[in-house]
Image 1 (cartoon, rainbow, N blue to C red):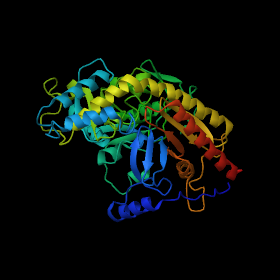
Image 2: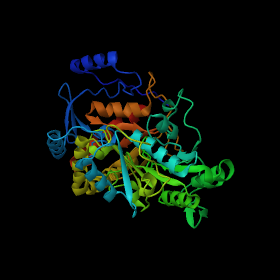
Image 3: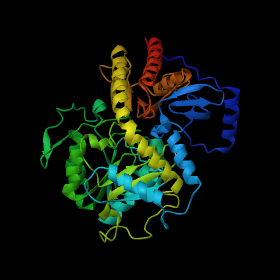
Image 4: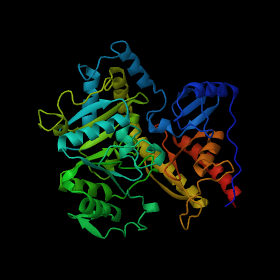
Length: 470
């Protein structure tokens, strides 16, 4: 393979001054790179402006956080109104209306025809922590199941349950014990070299079983651990960090059946794929499967830090079930903060009224456009996604699905860094995902014109890269 000639984007004097200041004071584990040296001054809608005045079309949305768009006026008004009344008094100990109203709204929109309770935190990782504590406390069992390719955060619980990148787990041992990782249905690069739907050759309790899921039933729960020792199965209905991987429709129903059969709690991490991003409130709504616990964060408050763990009432209320955690067993100083709760209520109203349908409509247009680009070019092997959660897999050879090598430039850049860097030079913010994929996760309010602009820039970049490879 020919090496690609690539130079990092030029950095303005204004931006470089702030980058230099940052390097002197900020910790070194940030994943900032020279490929997207974005120093932000302001943002509005789907546009970000840097300190030198250059505008960018944002197709990352702060990692799927600003679902309503940057600085939505209705969110700003809700926050300003609440700031005049109450900024903070711990929701773990006292009562106030915004927190109650937000919990009521989340119970309304989350799937499952059963009574629920809500636990608020400040990040998606806190929702993961709460989920593990709920499951172990209620089931009184030590073991848990997660998936290869999963990302659940960077706390000890989060990185233990994650299976995305070794850098996220390396040198932090010992992690939380008794966690088992099983294959996720990554059909384009199946670890078992099977083809969907031909890989479905058996059932579990009357439900079709993908070959990769049979590894859970026939190996993990049959040979390695007793199902009676398993408290939790935690899964992303669509993997985010792992590569924007959409599993076949049989996947979640099979997990639901397995969990019910062995009395295991099933939790869906919809921190990235939830809240309208896939064209429905939640990704699991596409297959009509409800979890026992739903993890929510990112887009919930349009950029203000918040998470919510929504679970069956018996799991979280000792008045309903004595095995649920008791007062004092869990809490969060800032969880359910009144100002952030006001932002979340405004955000959910905007998403429900306008943006779910827009995500479905513009997402279909964007996915079709990406598919057409794939058909015209050699280095995109797969396009997948739902709504405005779309991934494109980069390959060196379409026929064999051969991935790119780790380095494609003289100074060690990978193909994702080259393409996202070139897009950035052209005014498009785009992130990588998984081993070798691009992710499109723009604000849910983007227009058709925004999608056309993003597709144009991406195809221009793909064309230039392919020219160097030929």
